[in-house]
Length: 280
Image 1 (spheres, helix red, strand yellow):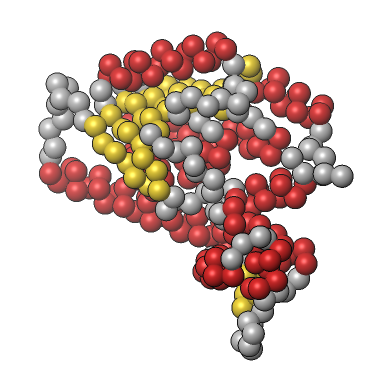
Image 2 (tube, rainbow, N blue to C red):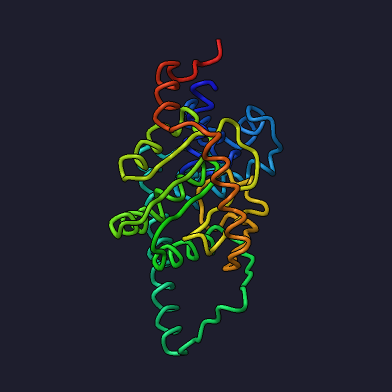
């Protein structure tokens, strides 16, 4: 991976799509441009570039000029990243507010849970997944296990980290497996420092899932295409309190856990190799 590719990957981690990340990077590197030369440089159509630029304007990372033809200028990197973080913080506060409202409404309804009937739900956005994860984690007691791609560890660090810390402080255990690559080394270190147990499975491409206390299972139906950090990203994720399914996922996790290597070993290997060199 070249230094440019690594930069693009990290931009995507802040919520930009691949097209948006490439356009923003190009404007940062080569200065203000009109849509036509920008579209030509990025090998896309002018109309498509207009859509990408308008989205970047909405996200606060590109500014248009007032004259004609319109010239687009990249906002400086620090300001752009601060804007992205504030947007994520706002989304998280909204999620927490909705969570409290739902908990209060639940108490008012006096729901009577049943141990006999299993519930199956399809979650259709990362917002729903994060809300359900926070709610389930709050009531978990023993262990949270997961097999996830690296990009979802970014979601965890941004949206679920406080819930993780509270769970660990209660004596809970968190284990997860992921494919650790160089851009995610520092992020994985943060998870290790927080007390989580992490293992590396090279180029894992199987089912993505997590299990809470061996009772609640969450598995991805189509989350492989998630390439950016945004609560609006569409996904299809199955949530269920069916214990038989949860036990099946747990057995699969334990098998993968034995086949994977400790994150510390993988990180040491990556640091010895050094960062990917730029293409010559």
